[in-house]
Length: 168
Image (cartoon, rainbow, N blue to C red):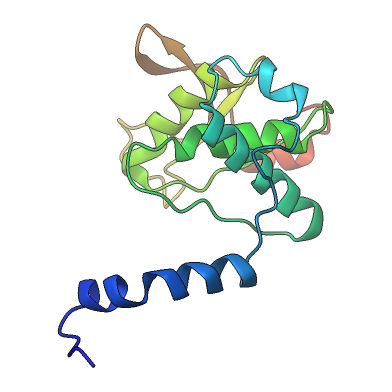
């Protein structure tokens, strides 16, 4: 038997067996021949066919479980697939969703949400710790896309006010 020195050696030697096992333990929730929800056509940015299959799989996963994960390399459209899955999962009903995003990706997520989901309102929760820097935005701020930039325009409130008002 060949001595395995690296993970690449291991994967090369056992890739067929690993692939077969993964497919048997985790069967696809959406296959190429399965129909795609018509709600995907409502998205302002259209996913590629493989992205549409992935987002349909996530939406189907949410029908059975409370969690799903999209794991892929940078640039594969994980944000688009996540937003599309939320839209499909809504089944055409109004919905509220929250995205917990690393700080360096918050504005990217907001921009992509506005560019992807029809009729969306996007809010950012800004600096709620001890008042923070008075020059920085605070509270819950509605954001909009102005050119290519995210700007804080629209509703400005606090989490407490949002909890107390049923009209938000």
